[in-house]
Amino acid sequence: MTRDLFARHRAVLPDWLALYYEDPLEITHGEGRHVWDAAGNKYLDFFGGILTTMTAHALPEVTKAVSEQAGRIIHSSTLYLDRPMVELAERVAQLSGIPDARVFFTTSGTEANDTALLLATTYRRGNTILAMRNSYHGRSFGSVGVTGNRGWSPTSLSPLQTLYVHGGVRTRGPYAHLDDRDFIDACVADLKDLLGHTRPPAALIAEPVQGVGGFTSPPDGLYAAFREVLRERGILWIADEVQTGWGRTGEHFWGWQAHARNGPPDIVTFAKGIGNGMSIGGVIARAEIMNCLDANSISTFGGTQVTMAAGLANLTYLLEHDLQGNARRVGGLLIERLRGVAAQVPHVREVRGRGLMIGVELTRPGTDEAAPEAVSAVLEEARAGGLLVGKGGGHSTSVLRVAPPMSLTVAEAEEGAAILERALRSL
Image 1: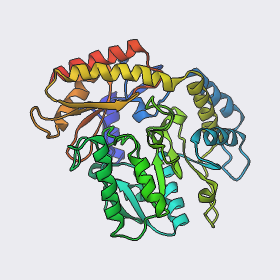
Image 2 (image 1 turned 90 degrees about the horizontal axis):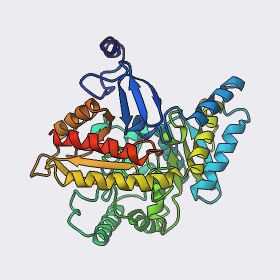
Image 3 (image 1 turned 45 degrees about the vertical axis):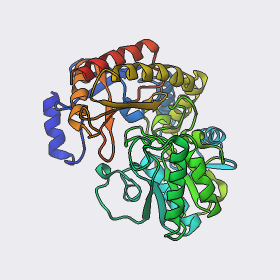
Image 4 (image 1 turned 90 degrees about the vertical axis):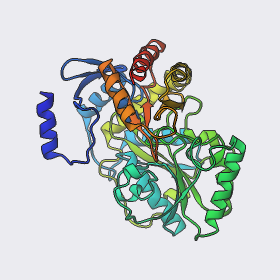
């Protein structure tokens, strides 16, 4: 049955629509931190639909909220008052840390980032954008134009003029040999030099932890240091929190809070985990920025009642059960467990991450050369052992991405680590 579905997939869907595994997997249902495939095989899910199943599969509170809302009305568009949208916007604004915040809901992180770019370029009356090397911001024409990851950039054409800045990758590149303080100083000097050669950009867009790039991050405080330079020139800071938001990093509710010395970003984008699988994205910005558009704009599907009901229920569950704290505690144990394994596996260059956002970078033993074939082999072996993980990486990197639902238990973390250990040792 799965082979037949694969053949049908290839016959009707784009060639560039990537699938994991030599024998692609059809997931039919899930519960908690587990999913099942069409053959009835059970897997511990350490990727959560690309960091999207944030709390748990089939979370009763979310499924109940969706069912009850669907029984009333599913959709009306933003042309009508929408109580669940207003209620979720109020909560998100309050949690954002942005003063006088306004919230606009979209259907995805890609659309959220496109909206943020529209706001920034309109507010600043310019189309030059600063972005980070190794970054990923979505698959639309605009967001591809600020993505600094060749593997996810199908065109060099763009409505934006993008300049790429150092700093998103701590352990590779020309500043990798420096200590944290000197690393930040070098990146700030590079930024100042870059700004001396161009007209003032509209904004810097940056992921606090680069997701698709392999869960890389700068030293804490880098973006705060950047902020001093940007603010002097009126340049906005957009924090792409599509993968880092809602407490996944454990230490903070938002990834930007590791760089908060000079205040919050001007704009924050979010998506993925807030809907726990429902299609929700959004933008948070100061009122003067959000309200700068002078033409009509609505959203047909952003903020629709059924997705907002899911988001409210999911956010309530996350806060009431302190899943941020759980990500910090269980994620910390999982990182240390994997670092212990890495010390005995020559292919592992580094285990990095925060909370339940963990990257395991693989190289050819004895070198710094990427080993994508090793990552693919580990993915297959982990699946055979009953574990699903992701992969990523940018320029010359190959990384296993580990990001379970944030309700992961200690026992499940140990079970998953044991399976991943066997897969790594099989290389």
